[in-house]
Amino acid sequence: MSRPSVTVLDYGSGNLRSAQRALEHVGAQVTVTADRSAAAECDGLVVPGVGAFAACMEGFEQVGGPQIVGRRLAGGRPVLGICVGMQIMFARGVEFGVEADGCGEWPGAVTRLDAPVLPHMGWNTVQAPDGSVLFDGIGADERFYFVHSYAAQNWELGEDSSSPIAAAKLTWATHGSRFLAAVENGALSATQFHPEKSGDVGLALLANWCGGLS
Image (cartoon, rainbow, N blue to C red; front, top):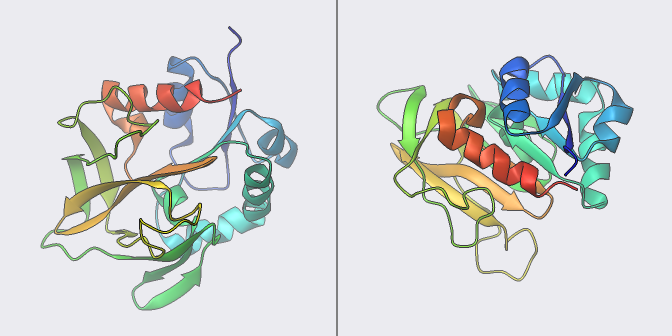
């Protein structure tokens, strides 16, 4: 079986090398680059991200990230966002009272968690839905590694609508308040936690994602 080609998009934000190593560990052929052609043509595109929403979005726009992601999704080609790389897929982020536009692939806002201790840093369980591809074979008691103070805390179209966006598979976690830990929506998937820092269970999740690449 041929190894799937994966591009980790380098736009100045993210744990690029740790993501590369984890993906290579599960059998992917990985390139870390800002090259638009590589990002468009690979089997799977990974969008990492750490830091502030607005700063990540600025760097993402500078490499043509929204256009790359939009074209890939229009053709049904897989994209995986990680941490702030998940957050910028939403319509907007609000930090310190300042609102910044995101990619708008999903409606809604990324806002500050209502928790006694921030950032949410460390290991936490998640509640994955039936039929999840990312969490296939992963037990409900397994823990993933989080580092964040902001998250998407609502799925604005609800979970019962006939809309393809609303029909997404949603995984939740709780730290003070409930928030989205992962979303699987057709070709676009994302995790608020860092699978590349989550040990064997994170590698299992990345292997599940890579298994869906052609």
